[in-house]
Length: 170
Image 1 (cartoon, rainbow, N blue to C red):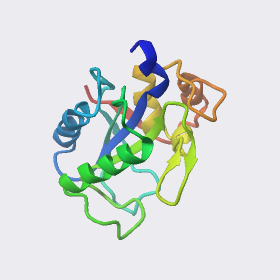
Image 2 (image 1 turned 90 degrees about the vertical axis):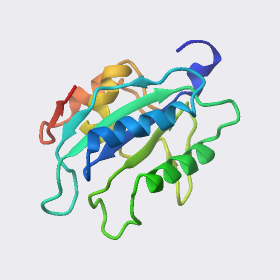
Image 3 (image 1 turned 135 degrees about the vertical axis):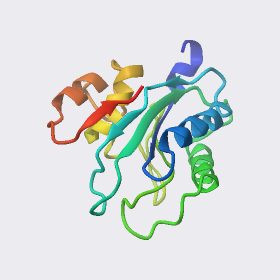
């Protein structure tokens, strides 16, 4: 993506471990396309082990997308839209931390913006530590340096311990 939009790229991590997760993520990506002024950059789908989830949680299907949001979009307005999509796709209100869910949409970064409110922290505070975010992001933006980091996505991924498993599905 070129031009003025590069500094305003939104990065969204998608995950699902209930239902037909691959189908859910593909449908969610179609919805996210409506928020972008250009075609989405989309990673492959990845099968990943649940991290910090309740015992016997099913494996996740994850992906990452990067796009140029519309000029009027703010991190807060995009975050609200992501939450609305999660509800549309059947995400129930959280009862247990990291419980299985039909759709999880995390706003990882919105350009170089930073914020910390009760509902939104940018950049995402744990994205640089998560293989299920970094492996798909490495496919579409290996040289990206996330706000607040000094190493590229590829370098961050290489520095992770190999305890989390992630395998490309497509």
